[in-house]
Length: 192
Image (cartoon, rainbow, N blue to C red; front, side, top):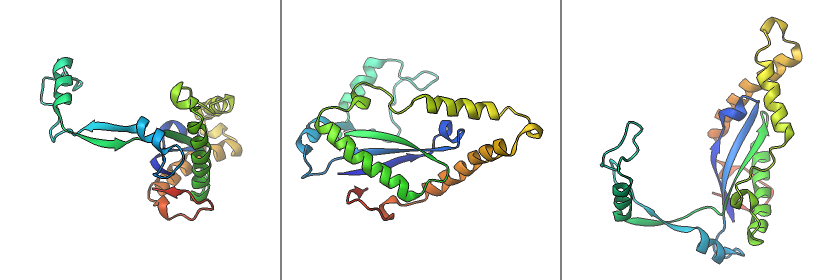
C-alpha cells in the first residue's frame, strides 16, 4: 500500500496559520483486499482529445446540448485508471516538518486500509467531514477576529499569531518543492 501527496496548501487553512495536505491512498498487488479494491476502483476514463469538446457551449463553457455532449463522451476511446480507495486531508501547524507529515499519512494509510477492509469508510460513503469539531470553528473565528484589530491596538500575542499566517505561506511553498519519496520515515509503507 502507498499514498501520493496530491496537494499542499489551501487558502482557507492558510488564513488560520495552518497547512492543509491532501493525499490519495492506494493498495498494491499482494495487499490484503486488493481484489476488492480493483473491483471497486478500476475505471475506464475517456481520453479527451486536444481542443476538447467542439460542440456549442454557453458563456461558462458548459455544453448547451447535454445529450450531444454525453454522446461525444461515449464515443471517445478510454484508458483504465486505478482510483484511490480513499483520500485524506490533514491540517498541520505552520512549523510542521516533512517527517511529521509523512508519519501522519503513514498512520492514516494503515488505519484507513483497516477500515476499508471492514467496509467502514464513513468519510467516503456518507460524505461526512470528519475531525472538524469546535476547535476548527473556534480557530477560524479567532483568526477572522484578530485581523480586524487595528495594528496600533494589537498585543504582542496577536502580532505573533498573525505572523503565523505568513510563516504558513512560506512553509507551504517550501513543502511544494519537496520530493516526499526521498524523506526518511520510520514506517515501511511506500510513498509514490
